[in-house]
Length: 240
Image (cartoon, rainbow, N blue to C red):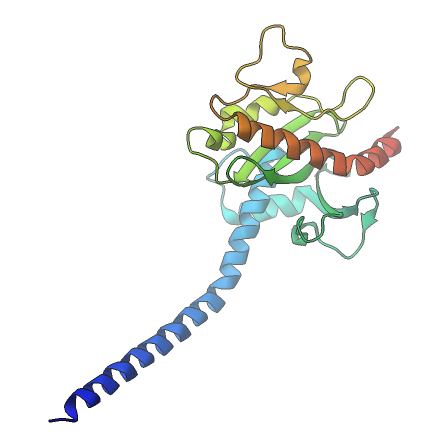
């Protein structure tokens, strides 16, 4: 009788250890087996957002295989360096802007052999989170074709409104260059633009109660456009 508690305790510890080991093996196996699917879903989300700002799709009900097909058929992707030169043997989809800030992914909408729009990833700190998105420019590399913010942790109903169409649609048709060809970007104003707003072609309505989120977007969008300006100049030179 004196040894019974000791046997019970050993059995309990052994059973707990066995369950822990089995669960660990199952979780590791599940993670390994699901990694390919997770990676595919990440690529699906990235490519859907690129297609959206390039105006190649506007429906959220599009089938996954259609997303990949549209991307492969109509989007040319490559990498440029901080001087605007093409970088060989690197894929735009694999570039981490934090780890390799001097390598810049470019996604180009092609209609046949003609480049008709350019899509650039943009990200930076807002109020509460790092916001990730894409901005697309028309072939003039001045007029905004579209913008999307697909990852953020801003406050729902306030800064979180940056993902809504009513907000992103305001960027369409705005211009990023001033009369002398310098980048001024597109600025989110505090509240609504006034009727006599100066340079309205470079400004969009802000979100009530989310001024700091807007300020963050203003900063990192302009920074993004500035990084790509050497490449933009190269393209404009080729087009002239």
